[in-house]
Image (cartoon, rainbow, N blue to C red; front, side, top):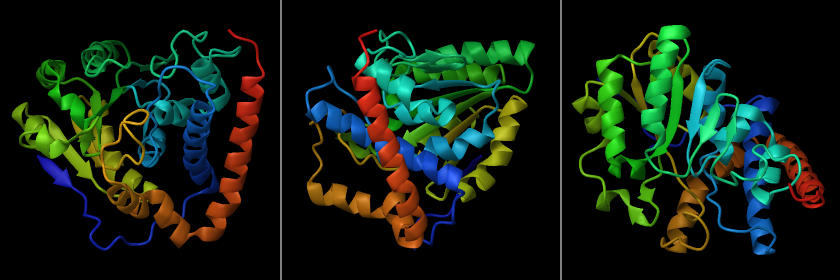
Length: 304
């Protein structure tokens, strides 16, 4: 039942993206970088969980989703939100508690609700909720699905298995996107995950597809049929082998710097910079300039 895309053994060149797709990738990266800078300057409270290195996952998936679909995110959800709503102003205002905040500034970085998008910092909580929504969609809006992003560490939560059981029994239109970055907060997957994610999906008779590609165009081509099947009531666990370049939150990265540097060199950004330097440099300047302007604007707003 498990299907797997070719491994990155030889790291073939990444296909050239549209300016729109690359702008999305670079905007998410610039947003996260701007956020870290604001934290370092003491302008934000609490902590944050960036998706640096994983930006391509929601950007690749977004065109496969429909406006009727519900998207459930997690504590590392800035990229999910920006790919869905393209609203860095509202998100940064939410995080900073400023006028124009998506949720009035009470949700912060992790708890966002907008239309059919919901994020939560409670690991595993979104899967049972997504099952309920998927059941509702099956009854009232056939063809729509519930997409839920989780990490590999969330497979340590019992609610995941209750949800997978229900999804399989009731043939719910549930798409479980696993961003497997190989480390749960500070514990490598080898130290906390017995077996495999594929094996756990198989235990419930749920289809599993894994990709380790970072090529946005290729990912869409590969995954479109499987996502289409979800709409017909075939739940799917879709696993991305990816890398988290930043710490879990702030200052809690236990990995040696050479390890992180190797991941950075193998990431989509470094590879795309090598394969398509002119396009990346042109659009990156715009993305960084835009995010700098957004940060200046939002910082100057009154509290929400």
